[in-house]
Length: 464
Image 1 (cartoon, one colour):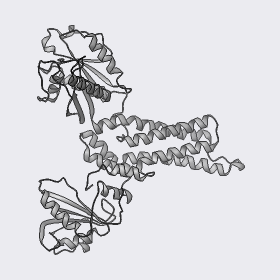
Image 2 (image 1 turned 90 degrees about the vertical axis):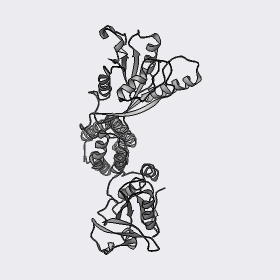
Image 3 (image 1 turned 90 degrees about the horizontal axis):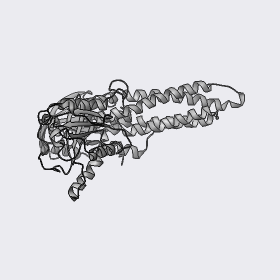
Image 4 (image 1 turned 60 degrees about the vertical axis):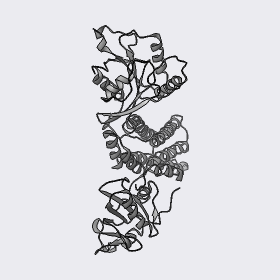
């Protein structure tokens, strides 16, 4: 539930735990007055300039000194929230930080809810909704490129593109609707060819943004890589080789891995989520059956599937059957790499041939590490192919909510183009364009509901 913005809120803005310092953020109409009542110093915080730091001591209701602190004062509207704000830097530690916070809460100050500071920044026009979401993405970013994209969004790169598209559509719609007022006078303010050109250009830009969602999602969430194959093909060994550590248990007993193991590594600034799965085979073991069921669930959701084959043997019929099933395991086309493992046991790798030439094939040895680096490169190449958007090429979206809003915008623009080609009245075209304007406006928060705002800001950490 969205709370009132008329009161003063406070929260710990740094991770709770042992550390040199902690920061407590206080924001609201009475923030400076409230903190000044708890701040024992030669300086009166009510009289200081904005963006200044002051040394003093925090005291409780009894007048006891709790800690020595530095208070940084930010006066509205030049603060993160757009309100009067004080950030108190105190000594770290769970007990000390909570005691300092409790001193502030004694003064009729309410504990902040998750994301409430950023919510106030949004309401006060310090940022639009896409920038607010970028704040959370920066905090939770796990890779260099994910952080880079989120930072660009915080700086307004996505917002600028969305507002540009929206302005073009608003201009075209306004002229169409104005023309309807003069329909009896036969006054033409904008011709059908111009409207069609504007819509076509906007539709192309919307489609490009939608196309960027693939790489945006990858940069934000990481690449899901499933290691699959029949038992004893070397899945766990290959996972250990890629990670360069003994993470998965390796034995000669078939079916050692009965559940999945997930580990992460970073390559060229992108996070990869490597998942070692239970071996695929027909079995009556109930535990193994459950493990194999989970393997297929992982395959369905994976971005890349590495099918590991023991290169010392011919490709078995059941392996070919599994490969065919993997190709149809998801409606979304995924990259499949065949890793011919255990080549250290072969005299001549070039003699290894398979009929399945439609997939990428690499040759590896988990034991000697031969070909492992090549496999890592192939995983990257399979994701960042030439027909996909590269980071830095264009504005990139990372948020499912944004993608869905663009999808609705696309459908409404296509509907408007259909109306033009069918020579329908301007009313039908304007109606579709109005829908497109509302849909694209949802991205930056021009059109929102309380449910949407609650969903977005509830995912923030307390103190942000």
